[in-house]
Image (tube, rainbow, N blue to C red; front, side, top):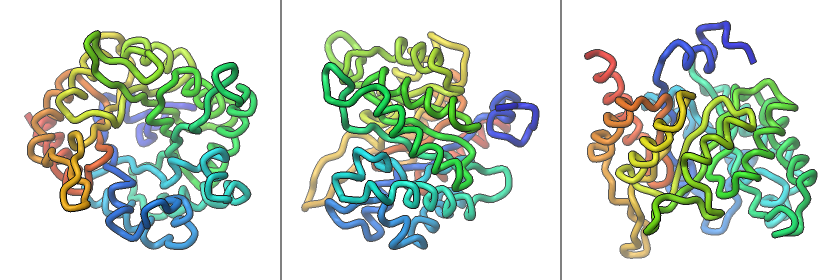
Length: 301
């Protein structure tokens, strides 16, 4: 991928711009017709207008980059719904829908979530099977018109690296990858025991253009993770925080962190600096509006 054009995603990052990602996909879809236990990716075919309106809602709120509705679009996850034979259509359609809603100088990134499988010998899936599964999904997303892929919510660095390799070897897309961390007595670790510092190193070593963290934490802990990552690298970093840790009230999932509250911490991340900021579970277009306002105010000073 060349960064020669100032209007490409990589070109703008290379020129020192800070960009805004979108907010939660699942959060939006659950409010707009996704049934409990339903397959989100099936909405790309059955309810394309809802998926398109989601992309537009985030672009209109100030997102420079919007994710496709393909988080669980790999063959292992789709198999749970009997949809593995529709993998190419579901992924390509998702990218196409979002790309048609993208304004000038805005971008679409293919969401690549975990397979839910473990690699041998911990599990029954070989590295080649996992590589092939990611390749099938990512190439379909590229065919749909995506500008990048976001290999996100990863818990095992080995799986993230396989997905990064699949993207770099089979597409011309910009590649981003993020992992999830939990804070214990000894600090932050992924489910498989990786620190934020080692995650960043492993993601960049595999060939990603952008590394970072998403999900799992509210904005305060994400600021801690962001600082650890920035202390480790001068490379491009992305952070997508949850709107806090959810609770259930009257059968509804409630995320406690308001757009105003999160914007104060986004400002601190801008000063680190973090190159791409967005939201994850519990965040919506209103959070992105506040993030955009925070960024624009920061840039004007």
